[in-house]
Each structure stands twice: as structure tokens, then as C-alpha cells.
Image (cartoon, rainbow, N blue to C red; front, side, top):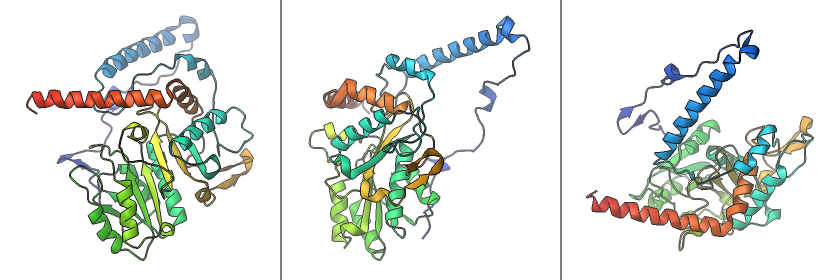
Length: 354
């Protein structure tokens, strides 16, 4: 069974042509002149380019609509750390011989999310990823290593990185239909589970889809698995919380994502609701699963179970900083503000006849 064909090259009937459509506007890299250090022409040129770019960023940021980023942040206090090359190579929980790292900040952030998602320190493993996609790649990889012959199930509205993972790992992948709301159709899910009862199930559960913001019903997914004859030792659930993974815990009566339920991993983006100015994310899984991935790295005198090698050592500091400044109450206030804004926009659009 191969991964089903995607509509990656077409969107709403408009064909996307692969090419280099920004090549004509690129900023060329030129060699310094021999006398540049005396004339200062090169420095002046670069300063003018950066000034124009900053002006462009300010203008574009003022009209930044439709992308789920929290732009209300100020990390001026962390500017002093940009003079250091900070690299979190390897396992966050195992010291390596690379001394310029921020593991102490990284583990602090991971512990915070472990409390949020209700798993004991001794029972989880995780790391700060370079983006939300890496969280999905890692979560699905853990599922594949736990169940090498498992089939990946994901709703058609799942993020494209889920289907990218299926291609990368050469996994059998079944796309499940969605309801009008965008969440997974568990009736169709059950039909497809029953058609493959002889193989374990690896499921991607969306905590906020990219286009509709749909949240899959985790409890119903688990119930559907059980009704289809899949015991907990025959399925692995990865929760893609890139969009709403940090918002849902602060929404009243919202579906709860917790390791108290039989899930295998959860990932969330750090550059969306948290407001980190650089792409990053958080990935947590159960400690019992990670040994199948971990391997010794001799030159680091450490172990590694991450996807990438070198990892951004600045990102954990930014996340640690914002978690300390805002805390649970701060995020709760921001969630309430987002909901008020959403209701306000809906009412204004309705009043305008949309």
C-alpha cells in the first residue's frame, strides 16, 4: 500500500510552478574590494541594505494577517547572548563534551511542558526541535520504530509534514476523510482500521489543522481504536499540536491532551502562540519508547535520539524567557484575548454581510 497521491502541486485549481521566482530580487553577495577596510564603502552598503530591510519588515509586520504567529514579544534582554555560538548537540538529558550549550534552559522548558501535559519527569523524554515539522517527523518516527509494520493513519487535512514523514520512512499511509469542520471522520477511520486489522496503527491526531483550525476528537479516536479491536499495545498516537497545542489547555471545556491517555507523543510549535522570533518547537514522548531510537555518539561522549544533529541553542533560552515572564496565567489571558478577537471579527464580518 503506497502513500496516496497528494495535491501538493495544485491548490484550488491553480497550478504551482516550481522555479526560482525570487531570483530576480535576490541580494547579491559580492567580493570585498581590496581597499574596503579603508574606504568603508562595503560597510556603508550593507548598513543601507539592512536599514531598508528593517523598514520592509516593519511595514509587512503591521499587515501580517492569516498566519498564526504571536508578534507581541520583546526579547531585547537576550541580545547580549547573540555573541555566542550556542549548540545543543545530542540528548538534552546527557552531558556531552561540547561545553557551549543551553541544556539547562532546554530541560527547564521540557519540564514545564511535561507538567502541562501531565507526565512525570522520570517517564518522559523530549527535546526542542527546529520547527513544528521536526516534531511530527520525530513523533511519527518513534511510532514507526515501536511498530515497524504499522500503518500510518491521518486525516486529509493533516499538515503536509505528516505525509512527508510517510514518504521519508517508506510507511504505508491511509488518508482518512474529514467532517465539514475539518476534524477527522471517525466513521471513515473505523472502516479503514477494520480493513487493516492485522497491522498495528500509528495515528496522527491534529490539535488544530492548518487551514480550518480543526481539532480532532482524541477521546473518540481512542474509542474508535478500541471498538475496532486495537488494544493499547497495538496502536501509537502522535498529537500534532503545532497550532493549538499550547492554547487548548487554557480553553474551558476543550478536549484535553494529556499523557494520562494512551498517547505516545505530543509536539507544539514555539514560534506560533508562544511568540519565539525564530522557528522552533517542543517534542515530548514516553521514555519507554525512546530507547529504540537512541544511539551512542563517540565524538560527543553522549547519546542522540533526535532527528537533527546540531540544534539551535538560542531557541531554548527564548522559550524559557517567555515561559517565565508569562506563566500559565499569562497564556490563559492571551488565549482569552484571541477568542475575544475571533468572536469580534466573526460578528463584524456577519454585520458586513459575509
